Image (cartoon, rainbow, N blue to C red):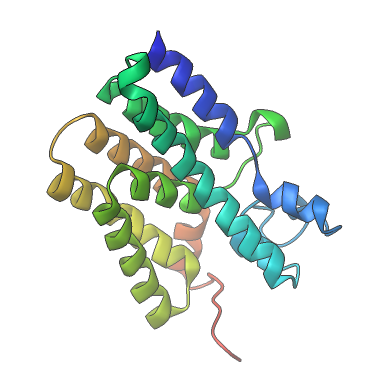
Length: 199
């Protein structure tokens, strides 16, 4: 029961869509209404506000960190198992993808997944952050960096955490991230995906 309650709380935390919250606070357009329509930091940057994009990135990342660290902290006290922590990891991620408070229209989950993985094992989080940064620095294509990072997540999780609940959580998140980027994959294959290269 403790595992289920923890997962529900994590889902509610994940349902806080910071792209929408920050945009409303700064009186910017709804991120669903322009660009890719995705409520995430990359699309918020298209509003022209770097401040909003940074706040969105921080908020979406930290909610993943918070949910997992809370579950770890209270695990012994409330009897949350390792499977429960894995469930929390997935639940906060699903909350971002399908937020209860915003009509279940969420983002693609890269920042939240990153926060989750940092909290599960900092070595996995650091490895993925470095991979994302390297790919983005070379290609200037955010979606490609996210896709390669997502594909590497289960490999790093296996290497640092072994086969177990947390590995399976990382595997499921990676699969969902790839699914959420299916349109980006199609554009990458057709050579139509946008980049942040200077013109």
